Image 1 (spheres, rainbow, N blue to C red):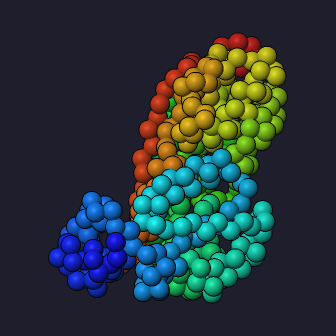
Image 2: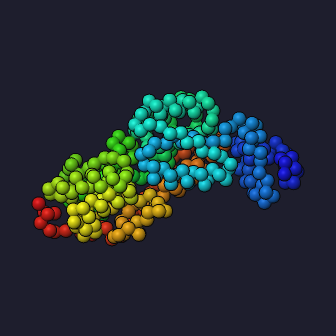
Image 3: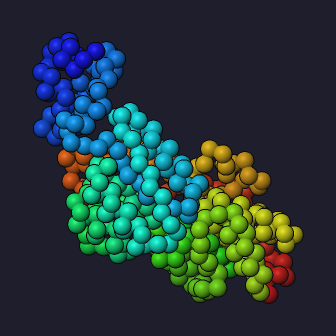
Length: 344
């Protein structure tokens, strides 16, 4: 079915139908929804190349990828893809070298100059992130997965990282734990700083002195979790509980405990941030893992939806969402042990 025929069938002009399908802001939301519903009912799909030619849009959203947090990244991208597929939009993934900030800025310049994408998604922001300033200067629409303390206006979606770690730490303190280790994300990132702030606030409220030796930083992988948990448990006195930055880090804690003949849920307690991976669930771990729950797939889907709204005219400064995080208690959080090692 061609555009003209489809427009005749639903009683609108071809221009109105084209603009509704392309997300032009001058078309009312009611008209746009009507056109989308009729297109679904009649099986009409616009010619993508024609739409892109008419609108001047590339029909793609850009994402720069690093290997850090690749498990979380795949879930996030699945959520984005599910949403963007319904709008016939593509995702352009550009790889970058690890920890090369200058290279990444050049990648964004190239994306803007080539006009291969209509907008981009930024991950792992820093408090004064130069990528945000650059994209604002280049006038390339963007949204941040996370948020930044920069004064440059930007759209963002984040979870309450500070509140999540504060609640986890408070729960462990309620159980009598006083030496609680935090396996945090990479140093210098905004969410890492927020998590540390929540951890410190919980300790301060209970009069427990902050010990920097109990905090480690790194990517969320099983191997890093194992190494850091093992080295932390070799301290004397050793910690009796861990707040792990992710499910993958928690796997490392489990492995480190087994290597030292300690039992998770008895000798040490663990709370992890749960990204709701379909192939790794907290309920099926042994013992089942206490978590703060947040679906990164849902975040990817929502960010895609917010990008579509921005491309349809919504102001970036109106897009600011902070999602609460739920604490789910299972078998890995128990009262602090009273054995001699814990009291050293």
